[in-house]
Length: 85
Image 1 (cartoon, rainbow, N blue to C red):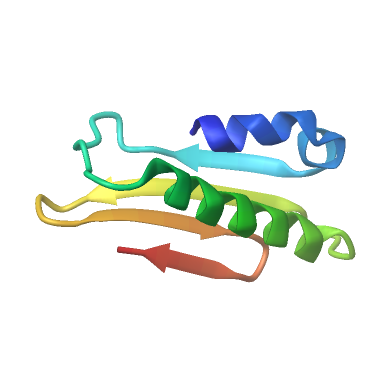
Image 2: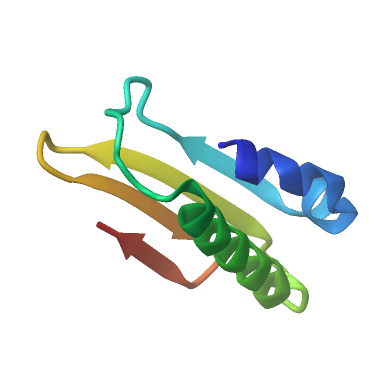
């Protein structure tokens, strides 16, 4: 979530793109390299912003969920979705 909030300093993202977050309130801890996941988020969000420049509909959605074994992170802009397990 902190990575997404960082993009509030991007004026186009902050003022022209509607954002919807549906985040799991009790995420499990995951062993990972934080900088790797941060880089993936950065790329996905930047690509979504670029894709929305010419679009009349400017919405970005992010959700997280878990099923006891897997954690899911979904990003979606007006027409593109990517899911990472």
